[in-house]
Length: 123
Image (cartoon, rainbow, N blue to C red; front, side, top):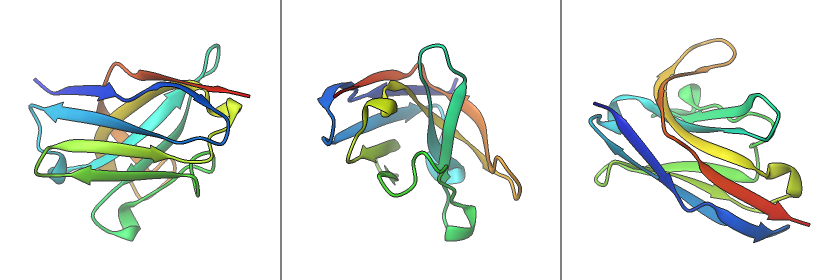
């Protein structure tokens, strides 16, 4: 059974940083693309971004491009999301996800995701 468990969320002031972690079990993350998406209260899922083994299989949504960075530690089977220069509009539940890369939008074809971790950015 694939399990993804996120951690590291919390309350941060605007302009601050957070690093989210996602521990994976039942799957080897190196065999897939890894990524994150988020969902704000009353809104749909958005910001799906994923990291593959090459630039050609990496995609950042506009809402995550430039301030957020996805990385992984394959030895620990753990995925990370470094978030910098946070804004109040980044407030959402953040989900770690694993899947495949498709050659067309939305590019990140997630097959598994976790329960999410809350990130709240105060102004």
